[in-house]
Amino acid sequence: MTDDPSGDTRPDEPHQDELRRKIDALVTRLPASLVYSLLSEIEGMDSEPADRVQLVRQYVIEYLNRQRTNRARRLFTNLFEAFLIDDDVLYHAGVAIPGMLQRVDVGALWEAMSRDAFPLLAVEAQEMLDEMARGDVIDRVLRSPVAMVMKERMRVAAVRHLDTVLTNKKAVDELLAGLSRNRPRRTRLMSGFLEKTPTIDIGTLRLMHLILTNAEGAVKPVADRLEDFPASCADEAEANRMADRLLDATDQLRDRCGDDLANLLPLSVVTTKRNYAVAALYIRQSGVDPGRGDAVTAALTGHFIGVTRALTAALSVVLKLNDRVPGSAIRPSAKEKARLEALMQRLDQLVHAATSAGLMEDRRSEPAFRNAWTQAAKIIGSRVTTVALERSAQAAAARRQPVIDHADIVWLNRLLWRWQAMSREFGFETYDLVKWRETLLEELRANVEKAMKFEETDPLDERMEHLLRVNALAGVFGQRVSGWIPTFSQNMTRLLSHRLERGGTLGTDEQAIIDDLVATARTEVGKSRYWKSNELMDLIELSDRTRQVG
Image (cartoon, rainbow, N blue to C red):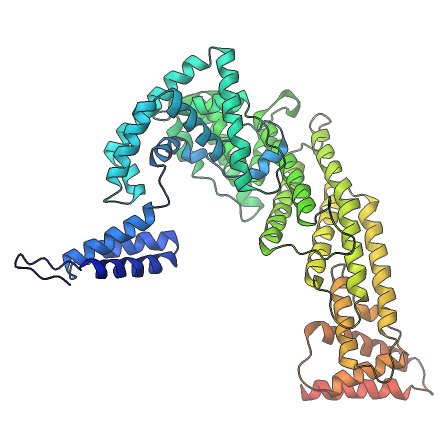
């Protein structure tokens, strides 16, 4: 600490470096929302030495701002913020999706506008925001009056430029080509499952122009009303209430803002909120004709196509379907599993939405859904099930110890059977997965029979562990291995007696298997009044004693 006659008590250089390291280490562990709370607390520390408080505050500000260097671009893209999404899944659709405004596409628009519409203003804005960000967090800076003026100047210049571009087909084509070139570069960072991004269509450019033109006017009530709609509904009653509200709000906006901006509300409920249930009820209740190019119907259809294609693309990459070595383990990461499960959940919502909206009842809208599902079913019902069957067979045959990917195999089987359940519900069930299940269960049954053949010297605990692994595979389909073990098997009574005599708490699955077999033994013993198997009677008595002790 440095003391001088003027009363300056600021920490000296070494202490400043140490303080910065401490602040960085602390702030790194906190979620962004808590960091802002921390900053507010620091700013209210009146009892602390003022210079030290200011230094801590400055270090927190620098930490928050150091990852946000493209400040002028962020100021410009804030004009679209209420409608922006980061959803690489929709690029898989390969078709234009009405109402879709991807953040990467608006970032590409910024690059074009800052080069062609307001190059000097872009430099001026960046320099001004950099200077302001030295003393405050960038979120506050972007809301300041000075920044608001700068944003309005950008908006006016961009609108003026796009007004000119949209009157010239060649200029439009050049701008769309430039914006589209940005997509592959950006989406490579977002997704490893996307082979090719579609080009930006004229509809997306017109939507950007519409929002820019009305950003300080009619867009605001649309954005405000969008906040009234949640991303999901608790039940059908709430979905119906939200759909009624959406119909009323859209009608009111149509009278106030015109058709284009009014339609942005239900489109944003589909794409920004992803509340498919409400959007489906809106489509049904609004009485639109799916065959006449309704934008909301097209958006919902685009989401469905995008999600089904994204699912098969992700499975192809995760399971290495195109370059897989037969017999090799599957090793999906936790992140890859989470992505696939999220896609399945989203697809389930879309299946219900398509049905609820009545789109499967119309011969003009139904083929798009059927074609997307059929293409996905071909990959899943043949190539993915082949991998699952091969790995399940190896896992079931692993007598001594589990295969390295046993848990992943169970996970994959569960994912496939969930797909089958959705296919059945959607009316697109095929024989492929039914046959796969039958073949797999037969393979498991054969391995249970092998597992129950063991010698006197075989370790019994190891045999039960093998059975439990097979049981985990069978459990995906609601089957237990106890149904495949004959009641009069001497090895069965020997194995169960050993496990019960061992003492201790049994796992849930093992207890269920033992309960099944003991119940079957009771039934067999009860069939004869004069002759009873001593082995089965001993097993039943042992089970009863174990339960009483427990």
